[in-house]
Image (tube, rainbow over all chains, first blue to last red; front, side, top):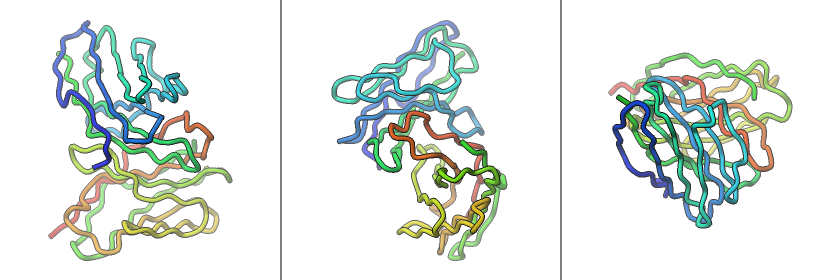
Length: 113
Length: 113
């Protein structure tokens, strides 16, 4: 157990809808990263938030957006859902330091129909 | 970040040492080698990292060749609970860690009873 929690565990949406996923970081961690993991693939970096600001972004379109709150919890929002957005969404918390080890939550399984 | 090459799958007998190879021939001088693993239906878990010296912790040992173009993760006494996908990642230690982790497809290690 890493202390990183995500909600909900599973979610089913239809194409075109919007979704919000939530993540609570491990105590003392002020950085949250989000990843998308399609079936059979490794996780792909979406973006990272540090002190409530987006701090880096992978190759994902603007319809993927996020927020980080003063308590360092975070949300991932996806607009205009597409079938290919079906995946496991992982968040990871960390504290910037010498090697920035990331602690992952269990993920949210999103299915888009 | 440099790319890595790993075998897609490996078997190992329970109680034996599991040796997982990784090639990273384009690694640069300031890039570290990280290993994470992902047990089915869980988020990735940090195992170990190193720059050029061999490293050992309570989970595993990391052997990096002198030219740093390849490495081996060693689980000294594999158990059934070590069955997982193992990811080898190379990255720099950027100050804010804003670039996320770049996962490939990893090696699916299956521990046989």
